[in-house]
Image (cartoon, rainbow, N blue to C red):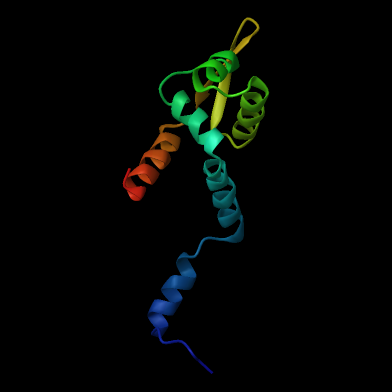
Length: 111
């Protein structure tokens, strides 16, 4: 018995275009990076220029341990990367798409 109000073609179209579980899981993981205000602050700074942990900590007023922890999470998610210069690691946002996600969020929220 069909309890749907949608016609068959529309129902099939919806079912066809719903992403697979692994895609949905990946999207959830990606967007979870943006669910923490500290990470958002760090990403915002890194969209301007690459920085080391000390600079991020000093400029943003965040404890170095916290900065390092959040960078590790973002690195594992592929949102930030780093390059080494001697003993210093300089972190950067890996894709302009990350900045666009943030900017679209700001626009959506009307800020």
